[in-house]
Length: 187
Ligand code: SF4
Image (cartoon, rainbow, N blue to C red):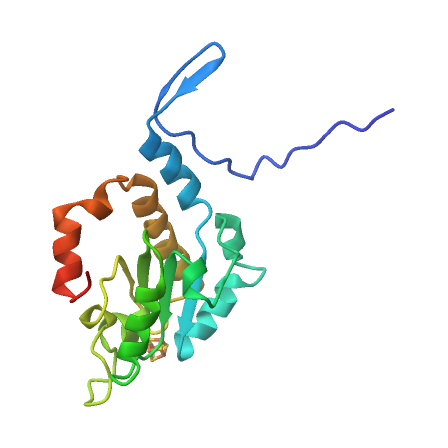
């Protein structure tokens, strides 16, 4: 006799976006359908320069397992990624490199500053350290902590998912977004 299939009830299914449904149909708007796909298939680019990078390794490993969020596909080529995760102290010399990596990513792209150093320079208020990566590129989510625990990184990642899922498809063409880019000298 075939064994009954046992489903893991602890596994949370992806939420269905708001819409209309009836017998045999379901309708929602295009923004929400694209947002749903994007937020559950983010490809991160880890830009790790110091200790926060080690916390990120723990975040990727089995106990915390970022793959559960559909984000297990790390890549070190900006052209394949849509989330830049900057983790660690960024020196002023490294600033243009972070910026170049950001510029090589295709739109839509998002940025997470992980930890005190990436967010504000952290404890390194010195002549050589960039006092936050938002001096060279726009940042979507800041994760506090020195270092943040993996739970903190996951929390930041979920905030990014929220932004990705709710972003209008027109945002990147809006005047406000263009202004933001121009304020960083990016066209
Ligand atoms: S925030 Fe703290 S743990 Fe993270 S890179 Fe800076 S010094 Fe290291």
